[in-house]
Length: 243
Image: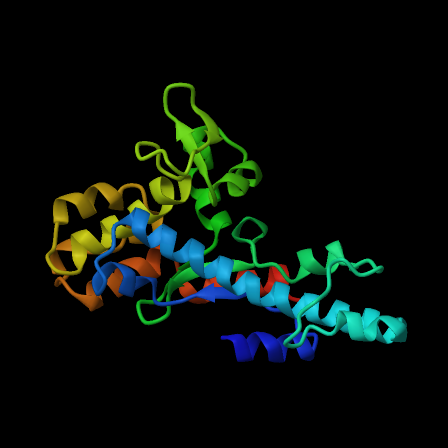
C-alpha cells in the first residue's frame, strides 16, 4: 500500500481509498461491529499518516531548494530536523486536505469485492435519512467518527471514546446492518430475519428467500443486490476523480 501511495503521489494521480475484504472481519476474524469499526478507523488513519509524511517530505524539500542556506537544517536524515533553527516550516493546508482520505468527503468506500458489495457513507445516508428526518448531506458528516445518536432527543452528539454504552453511528446504522445479513445467511439461514429486512430493501423484492442456501453464494446474492459493488465504486470515481 505504501508503494502504491508513493507512486500515486509522485505521478500526481488523485486517488480514492477502498477498504476491501470487510467480509473477512465478519467471517474469519469474527469481530464485533465495534471491533470492526475500530479496525477500519485505524487503517484510514494509517493511510493518511503515509500521505501526510509524503506531503511533509515534499514541502521541506521545496523549501530547502528555495533557501539553499537552510538546506542543511531541513535535512530530515538521521540527525532529524532542528525545530529551534531560525526558519519556519511551511505547510500547505489545501494540499494536506487534498491528500487526506475522509469517509465524510466521499473518497473512501468499504466493502467486499469477492462478495460483490461496497458502500460509501452517502449510500447509507440516503437510505436512512428519511427515517431519521435528516438531510442526507448532514447525516453523511456524522456517520464516521465519534458521533452517536440520542434516541430520546433524536439528536446527534459527540461520543466520548470511553463511553461503552453509546455506539458510533457508523456501528449502529451501518455495520450492524451489514453484520445482520451475514448472521442470517452465511453459516445458517434465518429466513424470518431476512423476510423482515426484505420489506425494507427494494433490491430484495425479487429474491426467493426459501431457495437460498446458507453460505457465500447467499451472502453474495443478497449483498450485491443491496449494495452493488460496481455501481457504488463507479459513483465514487465519478464524484472524486477528475474526468
